[in-house]
Length: 288
Image 1 (cartoon, rainbow, N blue to C red):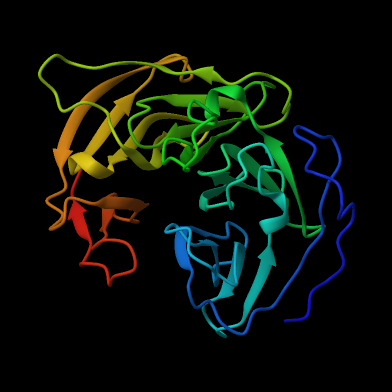
Image 2 (tube, one colour; image 1 turned 180 degrees about the vertical axis):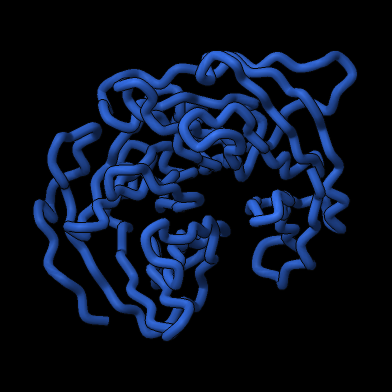
């Protein structure tokens, strides 16, 4: 496959750099051996959807990046971000979820690399935005773990304050981190989540989705992949703290809910997987 040139090709990624580190664009002939993970509609183009493309089984794959898909024409543009794999872990990047900010960027979680990437839509360039130490509870492990950054959503700036990302750590981490979307050097802060005794624990977090007023989302839905649950979290202090206000059973056949979407009518749509590499079961719609 033809490949564009890299800038700083021999240098490792610079965490929290102020300038773009890598430039790479590629048009693959096939996505064989890869998984389409996080999906996000382009906020400025109704016929464009963006997707994370990786292999969550860590098997050889010819694609590891993000894809821009025109759902009207079928045209696909692929941006290979494999060169941004975290050299500290030695693991292949697994790009899991993505979200747009309000400044022309896409933020992408790398679950096995314990980092968050940023892609510039205008310049078509990418960089490592954050490799916060709190992403990395299992960095010393020989095998990659699913407890790195997984689901992500964007909390816009309010009253001149910086915008933030909320990043859910997967597997048994049971943590949601608030990451500054304007200043990469600012350490991530854990959202202190209060749960109710007797509730299903907020565990094995995957996709997350804000709801509420656009300027100040006060409700967050979180998928619990291994516990077959959808958690509804609420916050009244800008996500310094939160409480689990409701828990819903997704009733996924294999107890693997993995993705969320919001419908125009207000329904929450849960995507149920059928194991890695298999065809998915139909989605479950929960009316809220």
